[in-house]
Length: 128
Image (cartoon, rainbow, N blue to C red; front, top):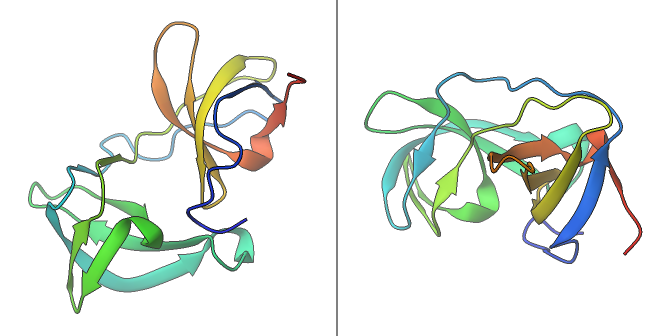
C-alpha cells in the first residue's frame, strides 16, 4: 500500500492493542498553509512509502506529517490538504469507524464522535 492509498477506507474495526495519544497539542493545518519542514524524516515501522516528516507550524506546535501530504521546498512546506495530527487514546475492545488509512495509520471515529489517528497495527478490521 502506498502512502496515499485509501483502499481501506470506511470500515469498522476493533482495537486489538491499546494506544495512548503521544502529543497533547498536535500539529494541525489547512490546505496550502505553510509549515517549517525539518530534515527529520522517518519511515513508520521501516515501511517504504510510510514516510513522515517532523514539522513546526506558526503557533509553535510540532509533529509528524505524512510526507505525501506535503509539498516541500527546502525548509518550508505547504499542506496538500487539511491535516490534524490528533491521535486517539483507545482501549482494547473499543469499536471504531475507520475513515481513512494513511502511512501506517487509520483516521478513526469513536461512537461518541471523537476523531483521531490510531496505528493500523493496533486495529483488527471487522467483517463487512
